[in-house]
Image 1 (cartoon, one colour):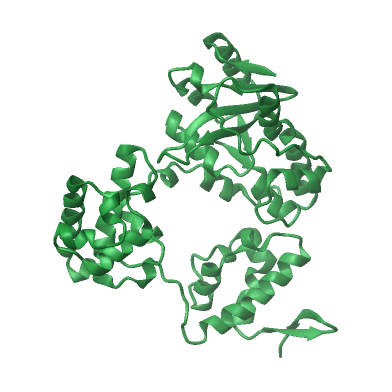
Image 2 (cartoon, one colour):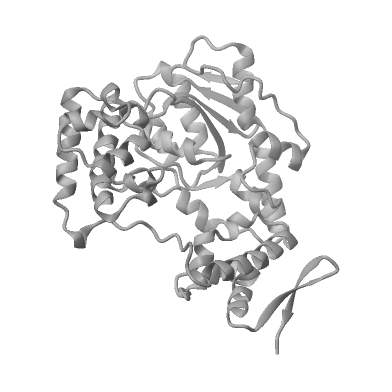
Length: 382
């Protein structure tokens, strides 16, 4: 194992990585007390060589950007979302092209978001040590046991990747996840407009349109404040406090501080900024009130239709050993039930062939679902 803690070692690694067809990557980080994740380690595997990059030994990690941006070097991760986020924040580049073994497990073994240890055990019969999972990775020096634990997260990825590629080829599914892998590496996934954060608030669906206009401004203020101070959003205001403030719409600091816990969370200067955000929300015209994404719930007939569609989807997913979640989610089914067929992912590529066309036939009354000897079956009608 090479511990990268000098510029010379880093340059040697970069040269080697750029000459490789595929590299395997994982990160260790801390984010319990910060808005931005704090990078602690990057683990790499290239062939049979293991590398641990120590970011604390460098002013920044931007030299690695050329590796992450190299189009002819495939980057393989397991459960890549948080790794991609932190590497983008640190280098300005989202690693690409990429392959995610967790996502691939959905079409090779029918597993829904398996952890690495479980996936290695099921796919390869390999057991790895997870005893150091709660290590403070920012502490130095790290013990030999901690370094060995960290490197295990990439050590077996080449074998897992090889297994998954062979199985996908055998099943004729090599290209099934190409679109998903490209989507994972889209930069705009990590550049969300602060004024869109209100949509992620807990219980936001309980707010009225005018209150949503307030929530849009207040959640944006909270997001920008958390970024500026580099602290978790909930340390500024919790989701519950944001929604309660928007329900009460306080006009004074005293009224604002009547919301439970807010006086302990905000300085007077911050409280004034909150009132300014609410004031901006009040100025929103009714025509410009924000709209939440349609959930499709409690609509006449749709729930019953989606229930039936789910039965067919689950049947085909099980028969083909594919995780149902990678085929479609509830919103996809709701849209299809409402007749929104033109842009449905279920009517494109392998999804259409696997179950999409059958879902249309079900909706059009051409097929039905029956039960025989305790098993569901698809039956063609008239």
